[in-house]
Length: 311
Length: 302
Image (tube, rainbow over all chains, first blue to last red; front, side, top):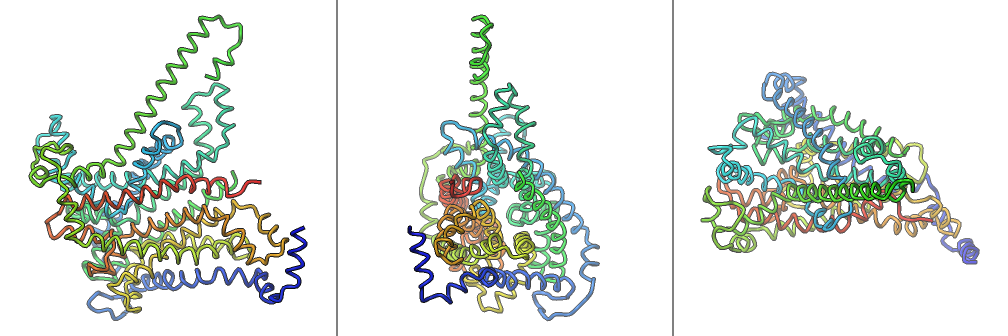
């Protein structure tokens, strides 16, 4: 009844031309998409082009005029051992934290979907590392890693395991481990939430069927749950990798790349050279090395996402 | 449990009882393990903040003695450093700046993002697929790469040293990820709903604003929280574009204003961290279920 009524109203509406425009999908698609696209082109694509152009220029903070210098910036950064250290570190940090994020994220996801008393409190506490601004949680970790007042030191000292202070951020290996620990800590909750979405997406009868068949917890996990949620595990892992890869706040606040550049990564090195050193051209050239790797990660994510849609 | 109930009747009573005991013990063991791992995970994740909360309330004499147990109050707790944070630092200014920048960025993100996501999923343009992938790639362009040239853009628009520069730039972070998530939410909405609305006489645009937008609400709420968290977390742009204290946001203001040279106001720093972390995490938790249900089920059934 109401349907036919509305039809008549529509047919007799005086605003017919407007309606027609609002019905033309080709026009609507552009009108709805264009603002976002224009914005992104102006504030991402143009600056990205500029950043690439800067990498081939002698632009500095003091002398912002543009002069083409070809590959000179790249020659200079390749001659600098710190660049190779930073490149290597970027890969090591990313690979190690990605592996840990997958394993710990999976464990945490299983906890988050389980039913138990006090679940809400646990969820709240567990999500803190992800939802808190990186700069603030890095400051909290800086205090945990303090050279004199570190509570981790205090516990180890009182257990009789160490005599002196560990100087977490003062020794290359420990500083590397400390930075990776913060990355893993802050990204595991995100990975867990993504994996949790996968777990909730499994039809309960699949789990129940396996359980009725007497399949134990571990076999269920490795032969039912994990294969069914592989795409989301992949997405979680790749997001973890990207966020480790591009982050500068953790390294910058904890160590500033030190001691003696042993924890330097590409993004922090680009910042130190480009901003603190004022050599914008060289900084832009260093930062460019992030791009091919990000592209690879993005392609892999898209593949994984396609598989989610299939299942 | 299921196995004992379904045990064949030929089993004698003692065997059934033994099995039942076995399963009960295994159940208790599994529950204990679950609680142990859950508590451990909660302590590790919240550890820095729990410790920060203790630190924030300590007297200097208590804090700066390496032999004191750092986890307890060896001397009476004090609120002095928390009060110092509110009265003698620009902390509240940072919070206010973060909130209004965040709200504006979220509004811009939704106004530009929701229609864009709709155009990409529902209007069947041949370029929708590549365009969607293009927008997703934008999300992966890191601030470290754009920051140098964007600082030029900020200078060119006269917004340097103003938090408006962040309002201009932050949607580059929030729009791509929001569009990407919204595409997911939209795909979960059955097309029949809009088709029905159009059969009922609404235009395509009317069907979008009157049926799709309201049904998208759970997704939109998830995106508001997600985008706000991204804005509050951003560090590099905020550090690069803004130096006056009055315009700083929380993520740069707290570390730069409360660390002066080598002097750390540790108690106030930790208090600031905890006071920011807790409300954001609470908000996130309230919406987490909705976020996930929006992701997995879509908004409407039947």
